[in-house]
Length: 421
Image (cartoon, rainbow, N blue to C red; front, top):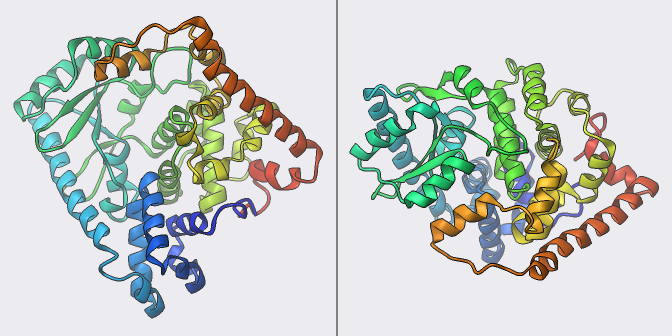
């Protein structure tokens, strides 16, 4: 079992995110969180992975179905769920208000990420927590959208210098409301440069009406949602489970109409095959997401990439949040997730300080931190050597997997023809 090395708490957290959680979780498994310390640890982990809404909703359903579960999952313990539902109502109302206001001013936006997923892929919007509302416009409409939203009470939190960096090196601008709501105004979905790309104009052209009655809006088609989630997994090196749950829900909800050939085409065009392959394998391994047999093989991920990624133990990697803990290993994972020509070279040059990293410039400008120039020696020793050291460990582990008995277990991460859970 690929998940056998995970802690019991992580296995329970993953089980609670499955669509069949209520039918499959046993009283013995749930008894793990009878103790308050373990309960708090579960909720803290779920919060870090941004799956607390999914986990708490599953626990509430279990409590309704089973008297023993009800003794563990008390109403007092479900207080965070009630808070999430109140917050969800607030976000739902604000999303409707913003979209109606933009429409009144002749502006059309495609709702991205959580704002779309919570109303299309999940049963309840509280299951998919959001921290901002992401809206995709034609680039020529960004200034008009800013002006309209300014009249609605939103303001620009960043300096002119920070916005200039965003425009040159990124794909969105930000706006904030005094009430605590935040917006990101996108003209793209991926940063410019020698990395994977998503055609934002295609996403806008093929967006569909979605959402629940009375709250319909434009959202990316399911295939583009999955591709965008895979791209975000590259950005943060698979740091949290929430996006894998998103992928599972999108595919499961739309499996009768999901166009796998279109997904293959846009992934190949945008050089997202590696990230998409890992995303789909994790979804299939952890949540039995209905991915057609042989689809990942059609992405033609090179064997040496598959060996390196398998040696990093993707299931343990994402469940334990390794990408969020260690910068050097996060950079290494990102490098192997890249498919675009020149992407790994770009990562290496930025890591060595030979090429500037625009995101660091943006973050420094936002924080108004003026960093003193670092010497070449400091550039070369700490970060690059840590990455190189971890890569050596990965290569040794990969050789063990390819040559030894462990290959029958760990390399099965890429095997669609056998049960992986």
